[in-house]
Image (cartoon, rainbow, N blue to C red; front, top):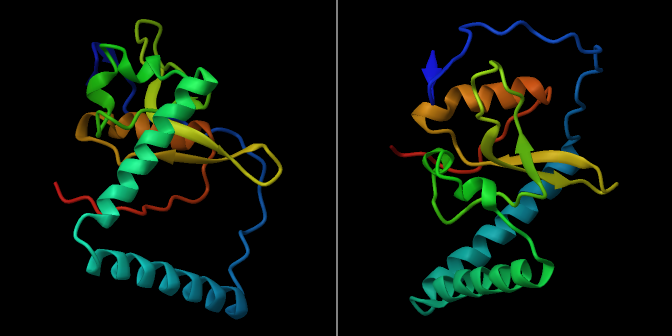
Length: 165
């Protein structure tokens, strides 16, 4: 397997990790509550979509404007995602990880300088980096995606988008 002029191994040995207890499943009461919240959210989206044609689009534009203002106020950068070698690794050119929270993948070969993946850490309730949000991998970034999963010992993956390509 190759990419960016790097020769990467075809197999990766599994890291030694402590055995963790199984992840508890939601009890029926918790599952019921999740279903209620999801139904409520979907009802709101459908109601807004059924109202004026551009109302939902306006809300997304508002989010985009606030995000830009926040980035400027906080001096947050996303230079890694704009780097010439990394641009082609972004599924969406206008959604880039912030340098301060981006996931850095370990290099597998000395000649390979590709530590970039379009992914960001998300804080949990205890302010630790508990989650990773990423775009669905492209054909040429699948190895980077699985390298990230392996490196950070991700136990659960959840796709919230539909890929139709």
